[in-house]
Amino acid sequence: DRLDKKGYNTTQLRTDGKTLDAKIKKSTDDYASFITKLEATKQYTCGASQGQFKTSLEAARAQLKIFRSDVQDVRSFYKLTVKTDLQALKNQKVKASSSPKAN
Image 1 (cartoon, rainbow, N blue to C red):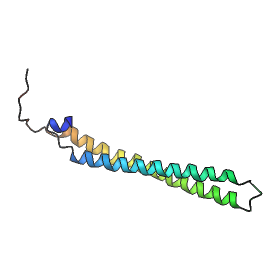
Image 2: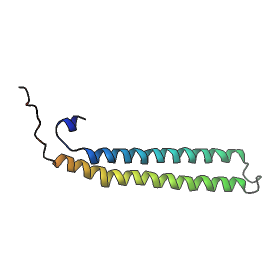
Image 3: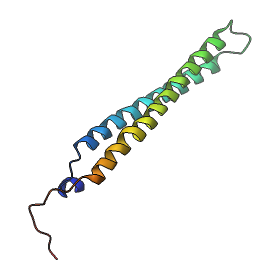
Image 4: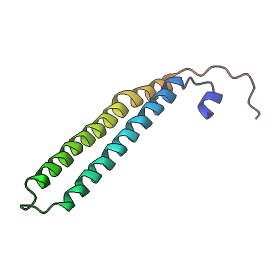
């Protein structure tokens, strides 16, 4: 809001923020799912559950890969998109404000 009042165009940055929030939310949800699947392995005794422990652990590992992919997506989005848009915002020429500054 402060940048808008100063005359900067922050539309793209606001869109980036919403996208970044969605990506972070997805990674948080996928992490919670990973923990749930990992916790599910506790109900099986290794060696006495006819492969159910192994199957449950493999599902947890697959979910962990999804979470890691989400984290990488967040990092790359921030690095490639948000930082670029912040730099573009920094390089913007400020529109003349309608009210003079009081000295």
